[in-house]
Image (tube, rainbow, N blue to C red; front, side, top):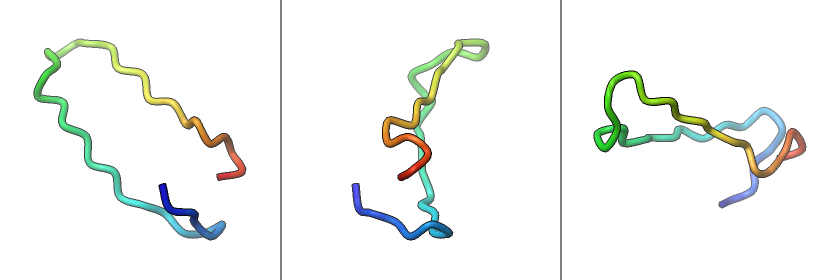
Length: 35
């Protein structure tokens, strides 16, 4: 993943079509709060 500046953000597109309504999905920031 490219590095970012403190105020810079990326758009993330997630395809949830493989999940049913009501499925629990957990998203995790593996980079921590430091980026």
